[in-house]
Length: 336
Ligand code: TYM
Image (cartoon, rainbow, N blue to C red):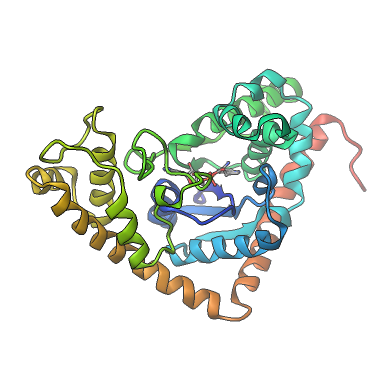
């Protein structure tokens, strides 16, 4: 039996931050030896909110370079740009026509982002989870490793696949395979530095709310110095009344590679004045190798383009037959 397949992606909007790294990329790296990985830059998703055409292409390259800098190994993984594989948009349309509107109106991310856009909210934002379902189902993955915030989109993906199978397949011969989400406990929801009850997000207007993977040591030190804390003496995990404390301890635990018990003991008597410099130093140390590798990759002319060209070919080899299979099930006249 061949290796199982995983599929995941990140939107190339803004800078990638610690949430993207700890919730997604780090997990891809840790399991990559055991899976065939398909990882992409979700640039079709990136225009569902107002975007700047002058930076879109470069952002896709930067995210690809960060995947590699974080340790994605091309011996196990295929990295590609979503818009390079036309099957994503085409399958999304086919899915759109079988997806009830009220399924989409229930999506939490739509509700949150729609509020921010007011009356100008685009149809793309509403239909975005359908495109995500197409992204996933095209590759027939076994698992989809993501952060906690994508859980609802993965449930919708399974619902769309099941509906299509029910309407156009049979129990013995389903058209599409239903993938399982893969959400790790630690790091699945990294919280904002300025409000421990909100997730760290690229779309937060304040850059102080997140640590970007390419932040300089000075920026990291500044953000940790300014981040929200509270007044009790001593630091401990899992206190609902201390969301910032739990978040910062968790970041320290993951980035230092220590267990929860060790960190709990080490930090139980600390005040913020002692903990913050420790966290800062750990964060800078953890990000430095990623940043060095990133700059090396970006400085090598032609390298990224060749990775992405090969990625497109490998992705199409999987995606196009799946699209053809769905079109056949829906009764389309296929080109001879
Ligand atoms: P995006 O670009 O918002 O986030 C990319 C990945 O990072 C995770 N993540 C977080 N994890 C922990 N804590 C956080 N604060 C945090 N913020 C983000 C996300 O869970 C995600 O795994 N719709 C997707 C992109 C996408 C996709 C797909 C993902 C498009 N098609 C198909 C998987 C499969 C998105 O906007 O992720």
